[in-house]
Image (cartoon, rainbow, N blue to C red; front, top):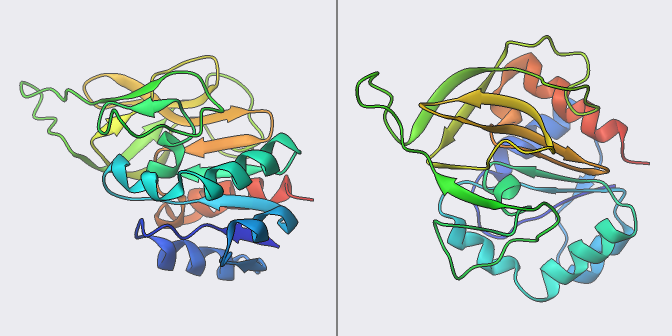
Length: 201
């Protein structure tokens, strides 16, 4: 059973529809204690990084315990940003800290008419093999809507650019994250979700 975490971040409906289309059993935990029995965890998210403050305390502790115990975790959009130490968007709100580094605001490029927020379809390059992106061709298009992004580090398995390069997908052991919305990225997005679900025993 996949635990889909509801912390008021907004895009639960589209993620639920995608999971239903894949025939996946999932639940929305009513309490942090319910996370312990999950075979995998998905933390979605849209909007300001400050919304992740709702996860501070018991929820964050429960998710961290599960991850430390080997439960796969997927962060989507703001949920991916939460995997890092924090974000300049809300400096006082800590992330989960399972990935090193901080999330920073995209600068865009007015000369190239690249505005922030970045909204639309971008092709992603894949610098290394990845379980999460397995079966996708480098250059696959996925859907983004965001103003902040994580840096390209050793954990980056999918990269793209909007005035500057940033991490589109990250993978570290059984921790995964995507800055884009797989649930809104057509066949490529469903393949990514299916790949994550394949890591959940």
